[in-house]
Amino acid sequence: MLSPIFDSFNRDRSRSGNTDQCVNIYPEDIDGPKGPEIGLLISVPGKRLLGTIGPGPIRGMYEGNDGLMYVVSGAGVYSATTGYAGTLLGTIDSSSGAVSIINSPTQILVVDGTGGWVWDRVALTFTKTIENAGTDCVNPTAAIYQDGFGIVNSDDNQIYQTNYNDLAAMTSGSPATANNAYVQNSSKNVVTLFDLKEEVWIFKEDSIEIWINQGAAGFAFTPLQGVSIPVGCSALASVAQLGESIAWLGGSEQGNGVVYMSVGYQAVPITTPALSTRFQNFSSLSDAVAWGYQKDGHYFYVITFPIEGESWAYDLKTKKWHRRAGFNNGVMTRDIANCSVFFNGLNIVGDYQNGNIYALDNEVFTDNGMNRKWVRSWRALPSSMPQGVPMSFDSLQILLETGITVPAGTNPQIMLRWSDDGGYTWTQEFQVQMGKTGETSWRAIKIRCGSTKIGTGMDRIWEISGVDPVEIKITGATFEGGPA
Image 1 (cartoon, one colour):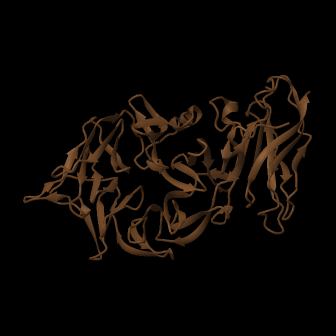
Image 2: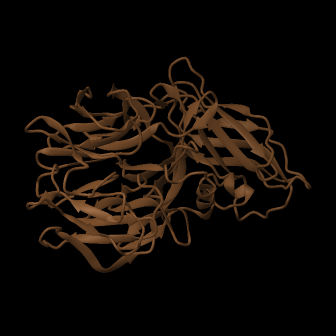
Image 3: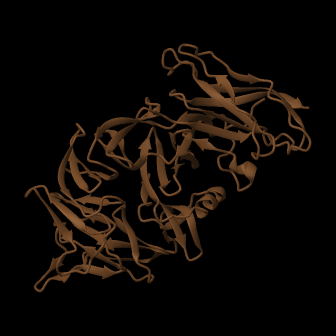
């Protein structure tokens, strides 16, 4: 009998609903008889070390229009070629926290919440340009580039525009006059900016305005009339590209802790009630950082809550969430990736602990040599079967690819346990062999799995997990048994 291993992921806020876990594996659609349906659970990519740039943490990465990669590591700003060895260009005033990087035809601008610095690729100079004389632009946290102009925010409700093709200046005339504008749809300060489809999305805590280039004298950008989104941004570094849309951790005057995705000029929630509840119970949301990437036709939005030590990923292809996690001393932690860039044909991420940069690689099954733990837990019985009836489980078989990516001389294991009271108490863990190298017809099966009983809740939850460095491709689960 089929067990619904593909049925739900973070389904609801009940205890049994919250036991539907998916960690370091994600669902993928296959062509079913009625169209695409989830039919595979597959490992998230591993992290292959490319190099070490600076002392870390890696705070931001950007592909310049000159074919170089620009990296902020600690307080240093570096350039790197495809050899991934960093060349220090200069230092900024902070050594941690999110940064924003943009470029013009000849310059790179980095802002970090304390100021802005420009690397001039022609003059080979690194200069602090914000704060600068003639403007009140201070502590910018975000920068975007559009139509030859750089646009940055300040620690108030203003945005500032650089001069045309000159990221180092944002004043004109004598005496110097700032090119700036007030964003007045609400009294809140501007949190961050994002460039989407040649439109400037301006995020406040409780709302979003969208501005476009109207070619106006002085400040070239003006609000798009009739468009105001009553949802803001709760974490300045949580905004990231997701396919042709953007996603962010948002909130409004009614509450926060929801991840939204842009659909046209609408903010559409994409977190489940269970996941939103989890986020809302976190001690801090403002420190969240996010990044997006596309691999194998899946568009992922990955958000990390550093204080809580958790990372979560949303897959636009299946519209499902799963958890990304490191594994240290037997404890799952946040994912080590802090930011990302697509460079030299690779999805590259930076480490939040040091200066390491990694390629996301489907043929690597560790995080830079460190084993990861994957977990899947789910309700044992399909929804078509009556609940509350004592059941005997004679065996459980995990259908998966075996004997392919197994290191020679190893015998990888699946760890199996179960709960019969909705996830409050669990059995011991049982080892189920996954098959050695070449054992491609191996069956991963556990016999004599006991029975549910009246008075125990009769709500069986299966949980399988593993830490061996092998690829996981689960195609289903079956059990033998019936009413006890």
